[in-house]
Length: 170
Image (cartoon, rainbow, N blue to C red; front, side):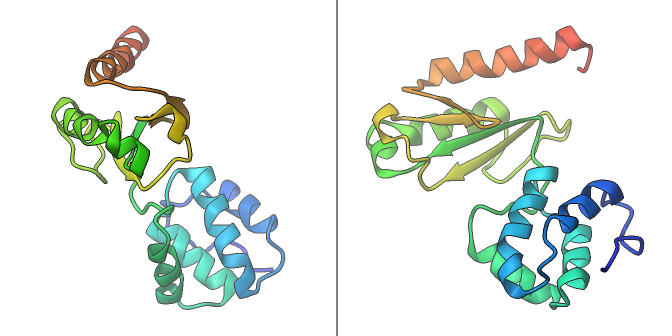
């Protein structure tokens, strides 16, 4: 079995090796589940992780990037501690998710796909979260918030900042 001893320093050796060990089938069929597990473990697919996966599966990194960029579920930048995802599906769109996105852009001073310099916040647009009856929906670190308003967003962000201030992180 390929090990990750020759990987870039940005990849956590024990964690990535553990993920690889869960995928002993080194065929192409293992690629998407492997990418999903790596992203679940680290929050994104780093260049170093792609290099290690390429070696492990004996696939060119370009093929791995080709697959990963085809699916919008994969991220290539580290998300912030508080990762905001705005649903832009039809129901959320009709119920005002564009306003929510505009509010987040202003409040966080981020564009979709960006992470704040302090790594506290990140913003992502999602095509549909599958929670149409709760529209408009925003997710923070996987927790769904229903019928969100711009005012509620401001409160959510302030709660995150207050939590960090109480922890002495900011």
